[in-house]
Length: 373
Image (cartoon, rainbow, N blue to C red; front, side):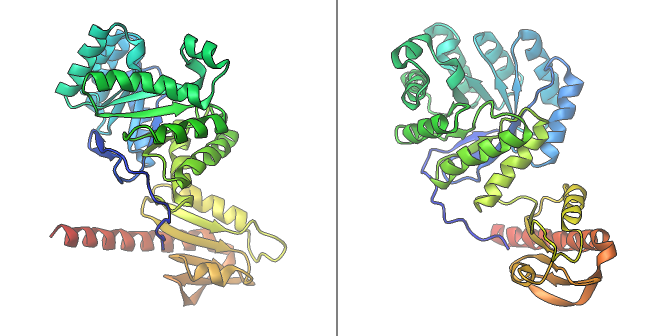
């Protein structure tokens, strides 16, 4: 029972990364980045497919050398998700991956050489309808900006971004998005807020080098949550020192919590206390692991007692309210006659949740077909 978000999105220009629309009200795209050696084609392809399986819209791949560019050719042939090539310094790599079917180039025009080299990349991108992402990072600001501002500031990040934007403007190229990432939440948020007022292109959000799985997820949720609540942001990447699959999960959890985009099951669960009539934490953890493959948006409430259980269940697709030995079961907000045995809750709930997901998925398919007709 996914309610509409009250957030009003910042107006922005629409671009396409492969078949994924970005900006101008399109669903906020969730992406991650491979961390395998790109020259190891098999490992990189396997990781991309795992990232895609949990719902990623876009995957970025670092292409630091011409050998990696040749490997990219074989990677592109084996996956169907839109791919962004991350390129620094060598403009020839950008030209090569463009030839091999890249869907977006992540470059900073100012660091790939002289005007002629920049123009050759931009002309190639225009000819092949490939967008560019300008990616500014607080840890790699130009030396003159470091000297001018003394330290990374929102103004410094935006000035760096606008230098690259001006180059693309001069070359009459407007198919680009921009990021101004930093590892400090306030620095990143300040920079994005400033930039959002200066350009109409889509913005790619991220708190870079956020940390490990737990701390990085918290830092990203705080920073991106502030921006998304302001209506800022068209794509997101959660930067974790962890399996890239976790980045996608956290990204969707952030969007889900703000009611911006729902994918998969939203578990509503109490932290449990001495009133619980079954093992709430164990039940929720087991269901999360078993049901990771379900991408249909659903609210499932698992509450251990009757204090908050009925109220949460009545606004959930599937709800469970704890009671002694046999717990109350709700579907579509309606209390069902059947009760579920507390000693077999995980199996019983998995079966009913899967059935409900299949039904909702079929309803969505019918609704889409009717709209298209």
